[in-house]
Image (cartoon, rainbow, N blue to C red):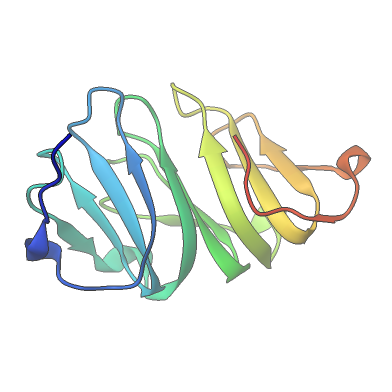
Length: 144
């Protein structure tokens, strides 16, 4: 019913936002910028420079907000297991046109959509990835 502008994070080209199941933890990505995290339902934001300044397209977080996956368009997938404080490049899936990514409630299962390519799945928190070529090569833009 009511929206409150959170101007403390500044005006940016926001691309994706994800919330923990209780709504307290929030992650957001900025195109050609950084990943931002909040632990107070978006009232204040922390710029996570450890994620690197990239062409972020998507972010998803586990239900408790501890684990996350972020997709860099024409780059790599990145994961975090410490509430977004640090990020690990997951180059096993390759450098691709990542457009969207999802994560399971417990953060162990992840999926990612490659625009102009395939769907990829990880069952070990992003350590390894399997291409699902049976889906066909498509212009994937979203995955749930």
